[in-house]
Image (cartoon, rainbow, N blue to C red; front, side, top):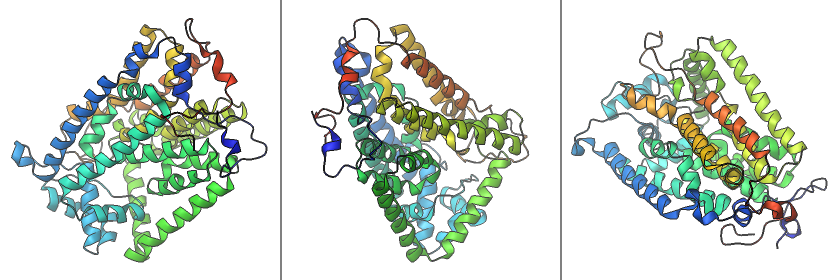
Length: 457
C-alpha cells in the first residue's frame, strides 16, 4: 500500500492528516457484493455509447465544413464561433472578435445566417483558437472534440475505475450536446478532474491544470479557493506561473489592446445577460432560474450571489468535518456548477466528475428502483436545456432573437432539478451501505493502493 505522504514530491500541510483521495472505485469494487453484475460497469455498453458519439462527431464535422453535402443548411454553432474568432486573430483583428458589431458581421459572412454568439473568452483561449483556425473547420472540430473527449474519458477512468461506463450512462444527455456543438466542456472537465486527482494526492503539479483554467476562470473559483484554504503554496506558485505565461504570450502576440477589447466584450456580454438575451433555459445558475421566473436582473443576481456563498460554505463545511476526500472532491465539483451566473449545460461535464467520485458509494446505498429514479432525474436535469433547444425553432445563436422579451422562452429549471439531485444524493450518502456489501474496509484503508486504474505516482 502506497501513502502519498511518503512521496518525496508530495506537498503536505502539517495540520492536514486526512487520507489521500485513493481509488474510490477500487475500494467500492471491493465493497460491492458483485460489481461486475451492475449496469454501471458494463464496458460494452460504454463502447456502444462511444461509437454513437463518434458517428455524431463525424456528422457534426460535415455540418461544420460542408452541410450541403448531407442536405442541411449552415447553422451557427459554438465551434463556428471558435473558428471565426480564430480567423479574425489570424487576420490581425483579434480585438474585433470581442466587439459585437464586427463579430456579428464576421459570423454572418462565414455562416450566411443572422445569428450571433458574443466572444468573451480570455485572450489565452483566443490565441488557442487562432492556432486551430489554421485547419479547415471540420478537421479542427474533429481534432478538438476527439482530443478533449479522450482527456475527459481518461480522467473519468482514473476517478471511477470500473464504474466509468456508469458515469457515461448518468451523463448521457450532456455527451451528444458537446459532440454537436464542439464546446469545450470536455476540456474544462478534464482539467478540473486532473487538478482534483493531483490535489488530493498532495501533488504540487495540481497547479498546472489550475493555471490552465484561466481559459474559463469562473469555473476555477472553487478549486482555487480550496487550494488557498489548504495553503498549498507550491501548487499556488505553479498555478501563478502558468497563468503569468498564459497572459504574457497573447499580450505579446496581440498587443496590450487585446485586454481592453476583452474587458469591453465582457461588459457588453454582462448587459446581454441582464437583459435576458441569452438562452437562460440552458443555464444551470440560480440567476437564470430567477430571471426567467420574472425577477429583475438585480434580485436575480442577489439570489445567485447568495447561492454561490452557500455552495462555497458547503465545501468548507465538508472540509471542516473531514469528510472522505472523494466526497469532498464531489462537493467541490457541485459547487463549481452553481458558482457563476453564466454556466451552461455544456459545463455539466464538471457535474459528471462529481458523479464519478461518488457513484460507487451511491450504488452501495440504493435499490434498483432508487437508482432508476435518480438516473431519470439526472437525465431530466442535464437534458432539459438540450430538449428545449431542439424543440424551439432557432438558428443556433446563443442570443435570443429579441431583447424585448416578446419571444417566450422556457423557464430555466436545470438548476433546481440538479440541486434536488444533489440533496437526494447527500441523503443517500448518509446511509449505511445496503446488506450484502462489504464496505467495512473503506475507513480502514489510509491511502490509495496501486492499481492499473490510477497510477499511484
